[in-house]
Image (spheres, rainbow, N blue to C red):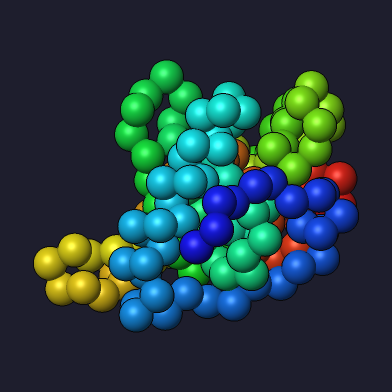
Length: 152
C-alpha cells in the first residue's frame, strides 16, 4: 500500500463505508494501521478513521489521551444515553486549530468488533463506555457514516 495521507475534508463528508471482513484485517493491521498511527502522532491527534485517509471501510485507530495504548475497532455503531454535553471538538480532517462546539453523549453503548489474534476472526464486543473514550468512539464511528463535526 502506498503511503497514506489525510484527505481533504470534503472527501470525508458524506462517505458511507463498507464493513471490514475478517480476511482483510491482517493486511489492515500490518500495513495501514501503522501509517494511521504515524499520522496521528505527527498531527498530535487521538483518533483517526479509515475514510480520513481515503479508505471507505469501517475501522478506526484511537488512543486515550495521556496513554500509549492504541485501540483498533471495526464495524461499529453506538447508542447514546439521554445525557449530552457540549464541548469544543477538533478533527484531523480540518486545518490544525479548527474546532467546533459539538454535543456528544456522555456515555454510550458501543457495539464493534476487534481482531482476535488466536482465532484469526473478528470478535463482537458490546460495552458501556463513558467519558473521553465515549467521545472519541462517537467521533470516529461518525466518520464511517459520513459525519464530521461540521455536518453532525
